[in-house]
Image (cartoon, rainbow, N blue to C red; front, top):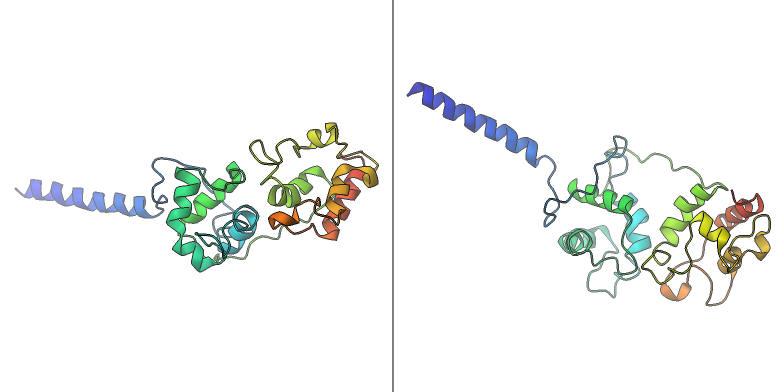
Amino acid sequence: MKVVFRLVSLAVVAGGLISCNYTRLKEPQGSGNQNFGDLKPNEKLSMMNYTFINSRILQPKCVSCHGSSGDVNIESYDSIKSNLSKIQEAVFVTETMPKRGALTSEEKRLLWNWIRMGAPRESAEPPPEEEPLIATYESIRSHVIEPKCVTCHNPIGTGNKVPLERQGLLDSPLELVLPGNPDESGLIIALERKDDKRMPPAKEGYSALKPEQIQIIREWINNGAN
């Protein structure tokens, strides 16, 4: 009888330990067995906060449709928290949002893990300093094209006929990038326009690029667009 009691006690303790480890990091509700990628070691404290997720994903991809006039408002942290289950369902389960092009795998990975960690408002550590925008395609892609342009310029977006990969820019019949000649490059012309054909489009709620961002793109083209 004592042996049986001991075995039962050990099973209860072991079960409790397993349960603690399992519940330490819960999966978002309704996610099933999906996994969109774990965090990198330097991201767990420094990047998983509302400020980062909002600037990296929500503002460029979601707020233009889900502002104060939308059924699901995500303009503030409190409104995000109150609509978190709807966001999870639309992004990870039904994949019906964002309407203007799906999130990239990297964006899904970050949003997924932020939600897994309880959608924290602030991080325990300040985020690392972001690398400055410089006149290279990779830097322009990460600082400008991804947050400002790929919402439309993706295979299923409204701008799918104007791909913004480096080679696509160079080979475009629209002469988007003419190495060494920024003034006649279609990309610069589109960014500097003052009418309703300016890019990103004002009529869809997008603000113009900052002058310093355009200047860096000019410099990249002038240097040969390498």
